View 1 (cartoon, rainbow over the protein chains, first blue to last red):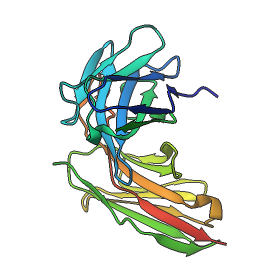
View 2 (tube, rainbow over the protein chains, first blue to last red; view 1 turned 60 degrees about the vertical axis):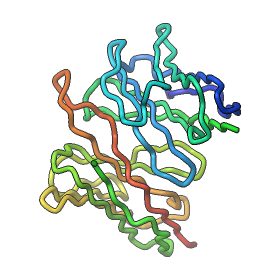
View 3 (tube, one colour; view 1 turned 180 degrees about the vertical axis):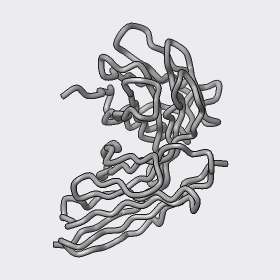
Length: 115
Length: 117
């Protein structure tokens, strides 16, 4: 069964460093998302991406964040200068089409720890 | 601020009982409603979605939606210990685009369910 994959599973970085979190969405999916979940908190929407551009972003997704689809398979989230409060689980998701009737499939997540 | 509220629990039910999970949302423009299950340390997994007022059944799960009351619930019949997890309610923000609605989800904090053997 096709699935969303994410690498690495765990990333430890020092405050102020740049990190890139990688995702490979399901191959025929067109709509991609990043969410994050701080430990013990709710899952929060960061950004959605369709047709090689950002469709919508939340207030969390400030200038420190960027997304890119550098090739036909990868979808990345970059945090330019990490802060302690960026420590969280980051989930990538994809759906077949930009429509609410299509299920979003979540990847296993990358746990980001900023020290 | 669009909010989704859930009782954090824990909700404890005996094996074989019905578990009832509830959720309220603040945005009257919300279009679609989802229930996800999340095991500890894992990613959310979709159980059901519902768009229209009323009930929707899928196996042991029934989702109920009342848009007038801004309320959505999930019933789990014949609860099993393997159902023990955190159940997340999520709604779409409902921005129309490309002939449909954008699917970015607003999640509640989740209700922790414990099914005792």
